[in-house]
Image (cartoon, rainbow, N blue to C red):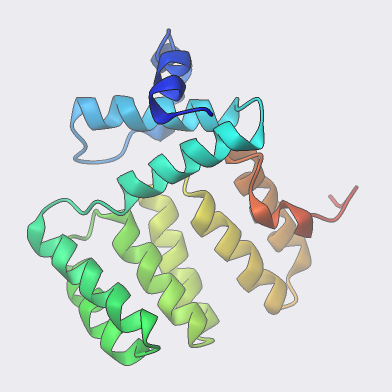
Length: 183
């Protein structure tokens, strides 16, 4: 069984020198940035789905760790409200979160998800774009963008977003939505 420690052993041998600058995220400390960069490289180069799943899980753990206790409480409260389908309650917490921590990409992504679940697609896309501005490699936001665009009948743009997501995460579940030879 491949562990998180195994992933790090494979990844950190010269990995940072290969990464484009777009992987840097505002206000991230060096250790967290290095961990993040290594996980994305491990994901992109995963030899199988098991290794990819471990990297994806670790990336989501990083994303879901808010910058401080106040932001974490707002995120956790919003998610709790989402679990009981109280989207209005979730939005109250998420609106506060993106105001309090505007550089925290997962705050925007979680709000985009909440808006999507309410079928407020245009507003959701706005938050997806903000998420991607802060975290260009957010494969979850890219996949969400693709699904919204599909629902809006914007197939060409949807396929472009989905291809970007699969480029970051080759094992992305939504890869099954790619239309072969569509360009």
